[in-house]
Image 1: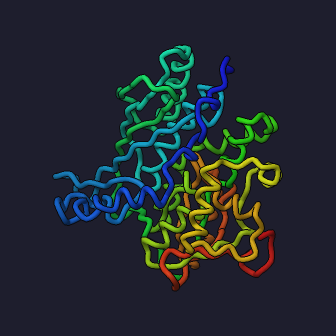
Image 2: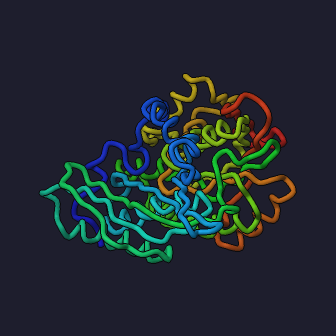
Length: 363
């Protein structure tokens, strides 16, 4: 179905580019973190706000060796087709369970919809979301809706995870290689779609990336015994890598020449197509001093900060296990997965850019 209206025109920041600025969110959540720390108010909260991660992990009596994983995520339209937007938003919400090494069990719809917008469109959004939940092997069991001037859709998700399989942002170790499972650029392409400047092939490639579940990638990480990882969403590669490095007390290096990109995104960025949220993330990182771009040109810098909707996993793997991880990921269908950097001793949270591991490349 093709939408008779342009859904993306309802949102100044489509998809995960509509997130609050990273620094502002940190300031708002700061006072809450101490009271919500694991072992503080309730020892059953295995993963909560301090340190923050991709989802909450909570122990239930009798669940020996396993825990609940809980998350919610919703966003504004990132494409105009309502069915595809529903698939994308639901896939994005499910990703946080996979980013913890878990599997989804149950989902609830979260919906905001303008009162004067065609109800056939909202039915298509919900149909797309239901398809993604079914594909994940989870159950859709209701939800909540409100009247809202801008369309918004997502899910609250409950999953499960084995204790030894939990992936944490701070689980990386010095020397670990950083493996990215999906190419960057969906934020750029979504902006180009909104402006009518994306080729059909570029839009199709972005939708294909955003609707691919991170299920196989999570299974590969668990099978290879990893303990460090996150997913790349609204704060781009540098923003989420900063969180990962800070949580682990480490510094990160990105080999820009190795970072996979969707076709056409460098051209689109050079022509001015980049989400405002990506520009905000980049400028905030530079102002805060934790991002050191080196010789990376302006296009490369923006791509590294590009706001991803339903992006890939970023996994920390010991050097001796990287080949096995990549082979497992590729067999599972994550064919773009590649090593894009490493974690090292240094200033906690700092992210440095080099052209590539051997000093060559497009950075």
